[in-house]
Figure 1 (cartoon, rainbow, N blue to C red):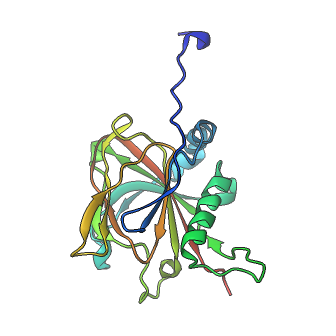
Figure 2: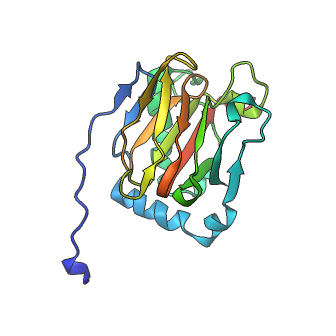
Length: 221
């Protein structure tokens, strides 16, 4: 089919940023533009990124909250990524909401961004992270326990590019909270408090669920 006869994908109208599930998730619809997504797809499909993907199986972990996970992931430098500015903006938007990271006297955010985790949840492997977990622990001593804000960008469309793979959270906390399933779309970004939100990813049953995850923590002393 020639380019002039191709029908462009309809643009979803931008919706307002919203706090969801008792204020535990900040939902930023259409935060990534079609151009952002195309640039990210080219970058993530490059030999450099694809060759760095490794199986992330944590069912043998000693940590109780990480007893069950299966996906492929790669750690990527934020400064090299397309749409890095949009991911940082999502962190700043979350900081405006929750104020968990330090600021300068002039109000400028001070934080350290971890490398970005790119994840592929493949339907042919029933990939998942179905154990309820939080991303950091107030009482933990690991470097990851310094995380304050988690940002997740969805790069593929539920029901079109993949089946299953629902993002679920439990509010106000595990194990007695209420289950919620997030309804989101390709290009959406969510943010939540790394030490607070209990969440999981159910098995992907077809296609590939692709996400970017970025964490922010206080700056190194």
